[in-house]
Image (cartoon, rainbow, N blue to C red; front, side, top):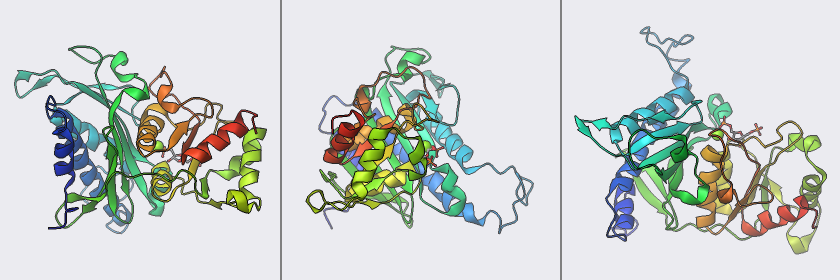
Length: 338
Ligand code: AHM
Ligand code: MG
């Protein structure tokens, strides 16, 4: 059998065996997230049929309530996490407050050791255009010892993540995850319903030739960033300029492409969004953990993303993420050192 014929679950268990004291809870939790994402993937694939099959407004032909896909993804993840019993709280981009999960399961009192943050369906403005979208997740150990989770459990620095990953619903469904032991990717085989290993120990190029940014916001950026983007478009063979521009508008898709081919993704602060647009806990932290594990870099233009002390669940941050040398270069421009 091909040595790469490894299922996601087998891979997670093999990683866990490196730690004799591991309880298996994190492995189960990752498997439960993968299951929820398979269900979301099915629904994403059916999304284009909604009109054809006669759904009207918020009801289908049977008079059943039809949920918007992002709400459906949120509900699926929360239900799966409740059933898993390994989380004491879930925070989601789709919900204003975190959801504390009951510690009572099957008549027994349990102490769940983890909390999880989700962006249930990233790139939601692309759903109706059949463009890649995804789910992003980030797992921390709880800080409090028992009972219901508190905000202290949810608001931890990115360096404290024990696992993070994303699932991209594209031409195939792919899950990428890290537990701090490298970055690994798996493609969903829909015939058997299993995620199969396709990338082991992914590493991002140190420098690349691709940049991803919403350039329509150019007039709202500060001068340093404008100069940096201008420089990428000038002819300069020593630096490999001009770069290519690639922007899907789904962070998870832009990030995934840059992870595989190399590149830099930028969502800066601007005159309108003074703290940027993207969310620290749901988007920036998990992808920063992954990119660093792959040998890349993630900052807010000044500081490492993983070092930011979160103050609120839905806090935003500027994000510069991808190939290390490219991110270092934009930081020089941003800080007037170029
Ligand atoms: P979402 O989580 O509501 O989908 O919003 C985040 C998305 C990212 O996926 C993407 O990188 C960004 O917003 C695109 O923003 P813009 O349309 O301003 O370029
Ligand atoms: Mg998002």
